[in-house]
Length: 194
Image (cartoon, rainbow, N blue to C red):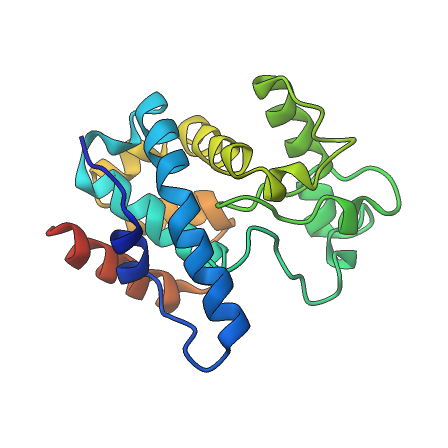
């Protein structure tokens, strides 16, 4: 069983050295995330081997801007996820305003009304009425991400070191941020001794 530490997270992430406020926020996340990662990794068998942990942390690192923020900062304030867009339709947004309301949150950016409903039901939380809790409650941020990982059978893809499958199931494709995600995976593997 692999134990995630503050040192592991800080070795995987690119540090914010030129922006003091971001550096402080990033270090705060390095401190609070390990407890919750270790708990939920055990529940979802993610910490059974180093490859699973490396792939999960690499994708999470990039989804959260190097563990800086558990809330996505979309280019158009979430309007790119409105129901009349392809992206909004794909994540189950139904009503005007759903795009900004159901932006990506958590380590793997739970996105869209349908996902907030589905994962909220599974963890017995009203995430549709209170979507912000997916970012503000660290345990829920990690739990929903691990549940998403499990439902997408990403342990198997990670066991096979299948980067493209992991990335496409997390991010909906292999083109968006591929180089950054590969670099994060390389750092994660080095840090974990793979």
